Structure formats: structure tokens, C-alpha cells
Amino acid sequence: MVSSAAFASVLASLAFFWSMIKSKDLWMNKISAYFSPYVHIAISEYGAERFQRSELFDAVEAYLSEDCAVRARKLKAEIGRGRKNIQISVDDSQEVSDTFRNVPLWWRTVKEKPSYNVISYHPGDEDRRFYKVVFHRSHRNMVVHKYLPHVLEAGREATAWNRQRRLFTNNPSHRWNSSGAIWSPVAFHHPATFDTLAMDPTDKETIKGELMAFKDRKEYYSKVGKAWKRGYLLFGPPGTGKSTMIAAMANYLEYDVYDLELTAVKNNTELRKLFIETTGKSIIVIEDIDCSVDLTGKRKDKKKAREKFNDNTKLPIEPNKDDDDDDTKLTLSGMLNFIDGLWSACGGERIIIFTTNNKDKLDPALIRPGRMDKHIEMSYCRYEAFKVLANNYLDITEHEFFELFGEIQQLLEEIDISPADVAEKLMPISTKKDAGACLEGLVVALKIAKQDAAVKVKEAANKSTEKEEALTPSEQRRIGEEEQKDDNAKDEASY
Image (cartoon, rainbow, N blue to C red):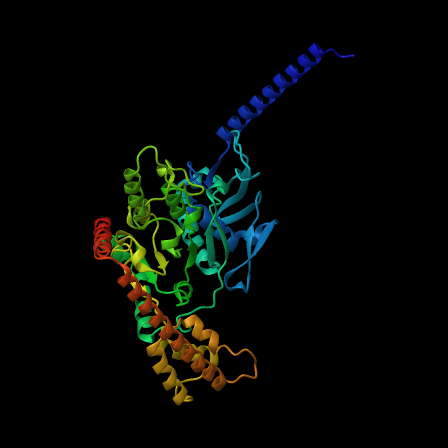
């Protein structure tokens, strides 16, 4: 029976011989590379710091899929532009040939494990992907100065033609990994357009003109020294079409949409990395920004509140938040840098959109001109917006139902109702219900809403009167002083 000492000696010998073999292979590879007439250029998916995906890598991927995929034996298929065609690309660990100016070249797709030890909860996330182009060394200058720029330009054109527009959402940071799984995409197929948007036609044409001017003014932004971006603030009550407006913008410009969920962002560094990972020709959206995180200046109020308490008094602790964790929070200054700081100039052709139900809740510094360049009020449904809805849902005009349209116009001027509520009344619940019946149902609903609004106004007036009568003169003075302090605090918070 073999002793443990002998077994250990055998293992040590095997390890020694294995290291010798690996060393020999390494030297053989070096010698072979020295005498080989071929040059290899590797194009990695990410840079050395793996901070941003390489544009050249994406261009090579698109170029090979467009021009060289027919010569590969192992391919992968995806749905292409408009969901009507199949897009074919070269799979991993494949080799395809190409010819440029009668010079043969060979492309290889490579996927390999890193040479260092990695601890990850996501198996395979740390794999490195890159393309390698091989050519004769006599063509080095031609490949570097002519061929690779040609690949970059052709790849960009192929990407623009075959690009399937996508809707992205950010992943929580604990799911991030070095291969860049920061955003998760799905195909974007929202049907909204400016033609179907319930809004005054004049306002829609103005917005469309501004969007097209932004899209075509790359040189102008460079000339005046501004980052190629534009900010929009959409504000108004729920159901007034803010999300529909975003979809209409994306469809009009043919841009991707990045839906940024701020509650999943821990700090300013994560926000910066998320922004860098977005691409050009995109709309970055933060919906209900007043409800997502505390960016309204309330942190200053909390700090003042702490100063009023002595060491023996404990303030209520917010759930899932550390009291002394200010360095790891998403701050107002971080959000301002995200909008128009130095990092906002990385890339170009981006539109940033904030939505809110209450514009007054936002810090004035967040929405000033230069950050949010245009404020668009998505208001209650008025007559012009109603005519758009009637045409969309019932395919009718005011000339066909003149009297009902006139009655609806008068009611819409007297009450506040969202376009979503009006659209719900206009949508036929069955195929047998005609347009006239839908309009009559809307008239009834508007009259009921008018009565309810009058009752609420009367009740609110009675409560206000009773409350004022119950207050003493000193209490009334104290309330007035507190309101004045709040107004002063808002002025100090603005930049």
C-alpha cells in the first residue's frame, strides 16, 4: 500500500512537470510569435477599467454581422428592426474571413476567463469578450489607418439600420458585475405618437419642431460649447399624459428610452456610472422624481431638527436607512452634476426628462433653465385635447356631432378632468355602442363631476371657516410666522 509520503512526492513531481510543460508552451508561443509574419489586434468589449463599453467593439460586432456572417459556420439569431426581420451575427469562438483592398484578413471572436481569481455570485459574468483581427505585418499601416476606420463607419451604419429600439431599466447595484449588466433592456414598441397625444395641436407642433432642431444641431452645440443634451420637465396631475408624451417623443426621434429608477441607486457614484453606460440617441427618464428620493431640500430641515434635540432625545429612525450614512446617499448635488456637470458631456444626443405631479415640491436648482430647458405642463383635458381623443377613439369630428361637442366644450371649461378619464368614457364597451352614445355618456359623467366638485368646494370652505374661528389671535400669528419661514427656506435652497 502506498504511503502518504510517497503519494505526496508523486503529486509534487506531477506539479513540477506540469509547470515545466506550461513554461515550455509559453516559450514556444513567444518564439512562434517572434518568427510569425502575422499581426494580431485585439478589440475588447470593455476598457482596462471595464467602466464603459467600447464603441469600436459594438461597431465590429455590427460589421461582422452585416458583411461577414455569411462565411461563418456558427451563428446566433435575434429579432431585428421593426420585429419584421431576423438579424444574424457571429457566435462566440468563431473565425470569419474578410477582404479589404485585396488584402485578406481573419476575424476571431474570443471569450475567455480572466487570469486572476474572481469571487462572484454570477457564474460566467467575469468572462472577457473581444474580437481579434489577424493580418500580414506588411499591411499594418493600411489596417490601422484605413481598414479599422472603415469597419467603424460601416458598423455604425449597420447599427443604425438594424437597431431595435429598446426600453431599459437599471438593475440594483448588488446585481452589477464587471461585464456591465447595469441596464436590462426589452424591445420598445409603444404605439403612442404626437398624432394620438391629447394635447393642443399648436403646442404639439412647437414641441416637435424643438425636438427635430435638437436632433440636427450637433455642430451648433459644439460651436457654442454646450453638451449635446436637452432637459424637459413634464408636470401635471395624474392621468394627463406625461408617460404618453415620453413615448411619443421616443417614437418621433427614434430614440431608446432609459427608465431610471432612483430608489435602486445608492449614491452619486452609482448614478454617474449608470449615466455613462447609456448610449447616444436616447431619452433618460426619471418619473415622479418628487416621490423617488429626497431631493427637495428636506435634508437641511432634518439637520436643523436634530440640532433642536439634546443628546438624550432620540429622533424616529427611518426604515432601511443608517442615520450616519450621508456619504452613501444620493444627494441633490449628485443629481445636479448628473444633469449638467462635467460627466453630462460624456457621449451626446441625449434628452433628460423628469416628471412630477407637483412642480412646487422640487428644488428650484434642479429645474432651472440650463438643466430642465423646457417645462411642459400636462394639464387637464380641454376642448382641443378632447377633439383629438374623439378622433382617436371614435373617428369623429365636431361637424358630425355639433351640439354634443358644444355642450362638452362648455363643461370642460368649468371642471377639471384628466384626459385619461375622458378617454375611458369615449372607449366603447361593446361593438354595438355608437359614437353618439359614447358622447352622451361623457356628458353625463362631466355633469356628475361638476356637481361633485361644487360639493367639495362648499365643504372645504365650511371647514376653513370653522378652523379660523377656532384659532386664537396668537395662534394665527404663529401660523403666519411659520409660513413666512417656509418661504424663506425655499428661497435659500434655490441656487
